[in-house]
Length: 456
Image 1 (tube, rainbow, N blue to C red):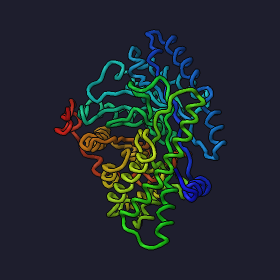
Image 2 (cartoon, rainbow, N blue to C red):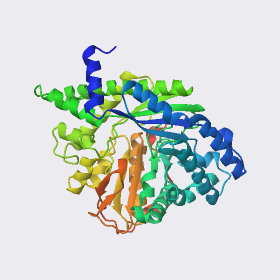
Image 3 (tube, rainbow, N blue to C red):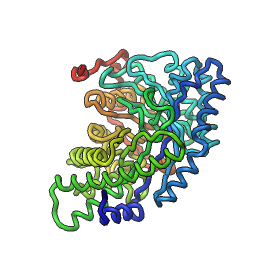
Image 4 (cartoon, rainbow, N blue to C red):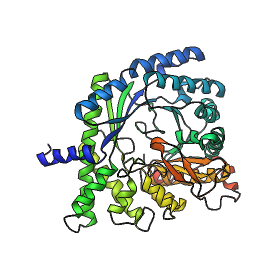
């Protein structure tokens, strides 16, 4: 149980340190909606999703008001459309995306994730249709999010899928050129994708998960930063002691998230799944991962020592969450999205954080290359190479990594890009050797899994 001073400190987190429940995500299984008839399939998924999700927003608001903790985003994740809609063509997949978008608008939620495919070991007919539909589906909808898993530690990296995703990203950017390639902000390419993640754009409902489930994402970069500063005000501390402060803070935040999630699940009469304690920043001052690095004594994220600091932060967050709850899942660590974090965006603009250093940081963080704007004339081969490098980090290290890269049409390194809202703004990052040919990514096939995948 918490002591009085711990309860008071949690209240302070909510009032002054940007603690919120970043996302409550309702997962809905669609396998019982399968039909070869498109109209029937659309009717089935509409009835199933709305049947579960109609009260989601109001319940989240009621529970948030009860505890004085804002639930920022209400979202839905669904079974991978490439599986439940495997019978449909690319044009029909686009129609399914439009139906999902209309459903999201009907129940008034922020995003619906699960326009997804799992292709780490091969590309089936439904997967190929979905990937072909991705650019149009994302360009013609506002609330649909997509993810494609192209690698796992057990299966290796599907390089055919990597190249297809690079082509899809380029096309999606071109179709939304008037919005700086915004469609790409709703698309993630993954290695080792979790089945229970509440955060977009990667959320989908795994095949082995319950028929309907609530997963919660809690974020608190500002809380962690202030906890570090508060303790350092009392005198010097070793890094081990600072890690302990982060761990205890993460424990409190996790319990807040589970409290909210369980009550929402109870009111909706569905299962509670996991709490994902990912430090997900926003463009708001005081709610930044980059500011945590400064609190630790680094001038900017990206300077020497940054990878070690991020490794310590990520590990402490996971340990605190695991102590607080038996149902921690998703990603549960630290995000380093460039445009969504004011201090990370500034560090990149000022030259402290290069794309190469960002890739190094992803070896110890929770996601990967996230919300990274790059020049619009980047070749699909170079883009595929960047994705492949990131997938290799996930495959070899048996961790989740992802790419959410945005080639901004008509703009070059150093130009400004503004996506709005939580997606933020940034300067376009330079891509070294972008003009070089890359025959490697066109060999295709599958990069074999590492030897340590043989654990059976």
